[in-house]
Image 1: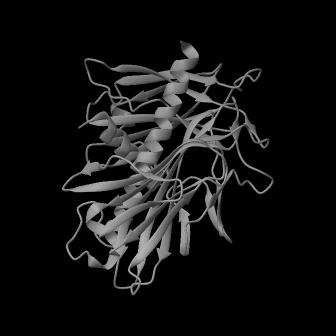
Image 2: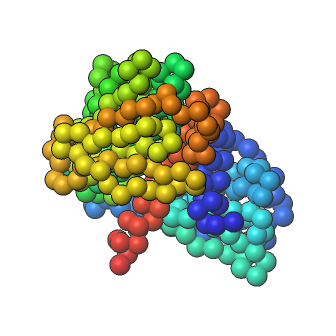
Length: 339
């Protein structure tokens, strides 16, 4: 099992559980996980007594947790030195959860592991946020009712050393919704998402470095016209916007306005048609594509299938990958700080 799959499975257990399961293997513990809570905000000290939580997932997907309090920024937790377990450490600080850089594996030969968790002070003052890349993907299509499910991934950059928790209402990001949006929301257990007129108000903590925000949109189109104008618009300065459309979903895709066609991406037995817009993009800039021949698809697509259970699974997977990306972004920041 790859490290990515292990991380995704571990994050799945984290977001799906109530985190109140008692550690069933504590009496068999023969190893230890120790580490340090590191403050990433200049001039702020790590307080004593932070609750450090360990999440353990075994090969059967069963979850157990254990908690200890940090002392002087350090912590030690007894665990089972069993390679069938994967461990992840997290700390809740100032209302925001932070994770260790990667899952930990122990064995009788390697019964100890050292890790760290970097936390940050929060702020309600917006930093100079920027979007490194926005990607909007068609993940499901129902030609019978004229509806399309879109997923949007925004890779946000926070150059400060504080986690931005949003304005007075806790809104940290506002995303213009696509044309003909019927419903919208988030694909994450963290934060809240509210459709307000032509925008999706996102209340997700934006940690220093990179944060991935994943949102979903159900849009409608007229089956008689058999076309849809797909548009992704940035509300912040951005470097790149991409639209991805499975080739088997459409008869044709045309880039509009200042957008252009990019290189297609091979995925399983299909390809993603790419329409892109890149450069120093100002707030309000969009990538736009005209999709035609939407009702012509009659065979299942390996990327998603139709709306329903499979689309729901796709949404869940993106949420887990986004969570893993957030964990990895934290690891990169920690490595950079120690270099």
